[in-house]
Length: 449
Image (cartoon, rainbow, N blue to C red):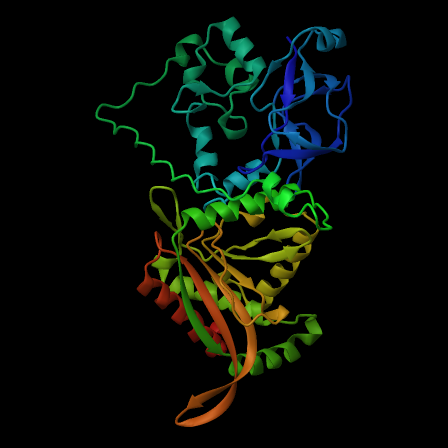
């Protein structure tokens, strides 16, 4: 029977996407692992690959089609012996995930907690290959239609098979060599702890005026409607949820940048021949990374029903792009030189603006930086990007009179606000983290030690 290839969810927050390009045509034979299409999500353009083998019987969605909902049939795959007429005449059966993003395997292997709300805890994606392919409390088994057919013919119980496909899905190779006796599910160990009870749902937040009510309010005014694209829709949903569910509190400090500015000018002069120019933001990234190592209890994320503490300093940095923003992550930032951080940040920012980042490059991290100082903003409060424990809002350096040893002097002072998730970091711990950041910024030579 023909199998429908469905529009996949290429990220935990994806609800729809654009089928940018077909890499196959009707009549082509494909096998597991073949790249069959390019899909545009709200964040990036990603390749996605077939899990099953067969012949492309019909392409149901044209190239360039936007707003294709997740789980919408986009093509029909024919099994061996079926011809194109089967695709047109027979009702197709749906496969939950006939294709997956090619980058997903790489992203799943990365350590750390995925960025978007609802992303799996570290190791979940990779661990799915070490256990039978089950979900939904163990009731549902993920297997390709071809694998199910072979298992039925050989009398194999799929509940005891370990899947080697994407996300632990059982594929043809897993069942071809299996024996019926090998399919018995393993018994649960005596005294195994019961599954944790699901966390209570968050209280429903009150909704604002409806779209119709807003339109009616401005009916007599000249307006222009701007339709939401995928990125803006995701930003609206995630940050609304962040503000409603994360108990934010704010810590404010100022740092005197005079020593840093002199040190930066000296380094840039020495690095000029190498084409390297350090920014103040590069120093902020390095200072934050080192501070997370000094205050390890603050290097943590909220993981639903527990706190997950990270060993490395993986620092995310907000990058403004047309229509939204990305937060690419600089992994192991505490171990990298200022020039290495500068080069990596420039590369990530450039590819973010052209939407060429892979998911593993903008998901994860425990801490984020949002710098609006280059726009002249003196101070502001940033919204935490789940599941991060904190985000540092950085303002502009301003010539400010300060009192030192009883005398008034003018210093270059930069205001910073640390937004903190109180579930992860308490006030005193957040203050220690911010103090460590300020100390590094005011003593920049120490960051090279």
